[in-house]
Image 1 (cartoon, rainbow, N blue to C red):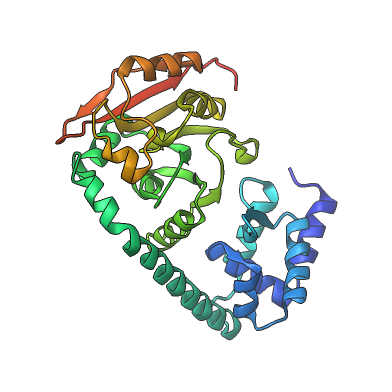
Image 2: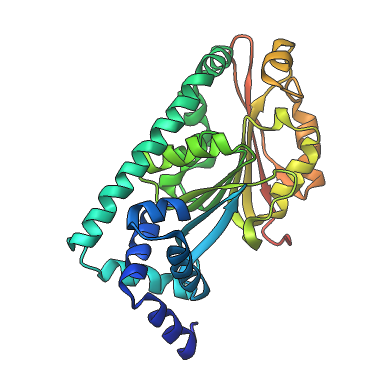
Length: 316
């Protein structure tokens, strides 16, 4: 519960024209200082000072991604609820807000173009890999079937890549977070989420061997076509289990054992698929209860979906 003094601090921080404009923009997406400076037409030092006041007041969140810092509306706190209420009460037909959102739309279009350029550059390799296994739509349908119809809650996608799992499961989740080590992939994922209007989902730079997740715990963690890149798959699974809530689920989508050595040469795969028992052993060692895996045969690669659950009384 926000104290009286904290409440006043947040209101004072918001009570300024530029800072109100910043709240509206950061409620619409994740933006850097440079992007916000371009939209507002103000100097970077001035915009940075306004942003610091809003972050200190708990109305905005700041996070780093390499050398960049992004800002977005705060989440998951009482003061975050206040930030959302303030934004919802503002007259969005005001000329200043209208112009800001037009410039924000231009930035979104530029991001989409950059993401598409990167995607196009690598599309040939990705398309070649897709032809080796079951169609993506079949895999997506199988994942949805494995998870059932219940709402997802809080959701983490490890190695999110282009954000395909966030796009698939985000509409059913309270909130979604995707992490990836590649800034290029994060740019693609961010553009895809903006196109899909999944404002409840976000992406961050992160390491699958050392998840920070800001102390959060998740109802669902997915590892989609990532484990075969890992030197230590068991460590990745243990990290996923660590950030799962008791009763939460881990879904791993990857390949069954195969002999396609070209995937090591051309696609940097460290492992040529996984046996059911080794995935099960890693999950058990991480305090998870493995369920029966699902197989989707392809030529020559078979996609496997391994579901595990954390016991309801298990600690984090």
